[in-house]
Image (cartoon, rainbow, N blue to C red; front, side, top):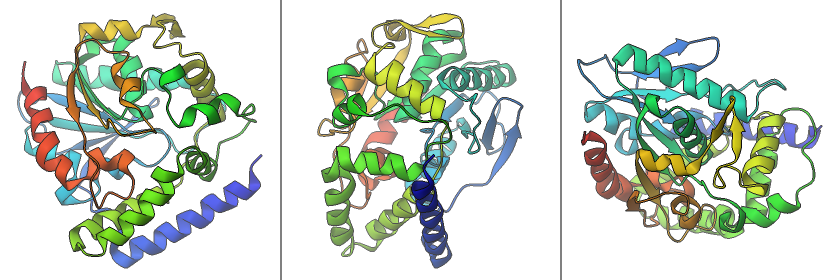
Length: 333
């Protein structure tokens, strides 16, 4: 249904491949892949005795290696060094018409259940952006599988708290059938927040020229941003209708897997939130407005991250100042 954008996806992926061949691709940690009929995970490092399991949930739009981009700014490596048993959820890249919000929550729940069985302990869920939203919904309906929840720039409350994407989402036409090209989602983001996705990124590229380490991170993020991913039309439709337009999770009215997912049930969990108080893409009120007494870790915009929305994952300052505190919080029993 989107031939032009599908061609754009292919072109952007080819540009990304050229950047990777030029040395600007990710430098990932070795992993074992766990294949299951309903989900796919990366498992990192040998299993240590009594290691607390962590399940990382990326956004279901681009590839998951943003959590393991470069050794010096890798959330995965940092968690491994801290002694956790780390798993990274991989969203299926070839999705059929049956993939939707409910199937995604089901898949995450099954992955968390497998990890809990293997470790005899519930997981700490760490989710970024929409991945954090889905992690929170999973935690709300399956709290026995989740010991703690870490939300990184993850919206929970929509409606008036939606931010820059709100007007675009509320006025968008119905999503036609078929996978939604990543280029179309990128274009929508640019229209919604050009200062974040165009102006700031261009400024960051100029500033990073004076700092080789920042430039390396910047280019690696740009390469990642070209790794297009075509999520299911039904998943996007569910996100737009059930979350953005109807705000059902924050209103405690989201029906999924025969249950009602309630944001207020998160008060029974220990929840930490990394938020950017200056962000228009994910306003801090969208994260904090649905939580009761979370541990808050503010992120300050920094140079060399290309996109501030992923800054908490790849920023040098974030890794120096935020993640050590988050890990200390994660270790508390």
